[in-house]
Image (cartoon, rainbow, N blue to C red; front, side, top):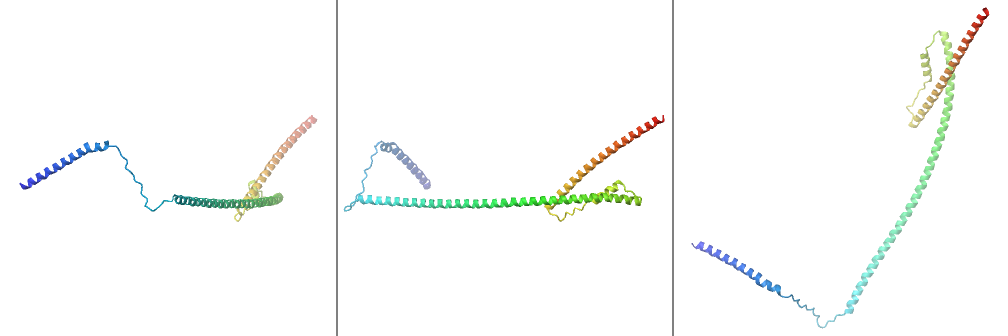
Length: 253
């Protein structure tokens, strides 16, 4: 048919074109390219630009302009350098002023700190002296109170014995001890005291307990000594009585 013939003609035409391209490429690569590579390289002639007629080049003017330009650049660099140097000098001066100001401030702070330390030391010394005086005064008052208490205890014991003899009743040792302790016990009354005052009160109570322990030790030692002396006297009396009996028996014989 006509359509089939047209398709076959187009296919034949495409095949012919492909064969032609292949042949041209093969011919260029095989013959033209090696011929071009085998030829020596020739530098093309460079023609300098032509100066128009009637104009002359003034090399002195060009040199002068270049020198002026270089001089301006150098002057600019010198000005920039001196400006930077001036700025650095100003910064150095400001830094020195800050250092001097800081030194003066430190010296003033050191002076103020020294004065405060001296005032604090003086205040502590005055406080220590005042506390020592108060402690000495309290110690004297406590000694006076203890002497008064001991005197009243001796007198009270004597009066108690008289009362017991008159009433015919005797208290036990436990009851006597309770009564003595109740008479000696003092109310603390520490609710309204500050922390420093509480410390002083605790120290005062500790000193009082220490003194009581010392008095207790002295009384125990005195009691032991008296007991030993009583035993020695009893032994002497017993020996004396035995000797007297033997003497009487010898006289009777």
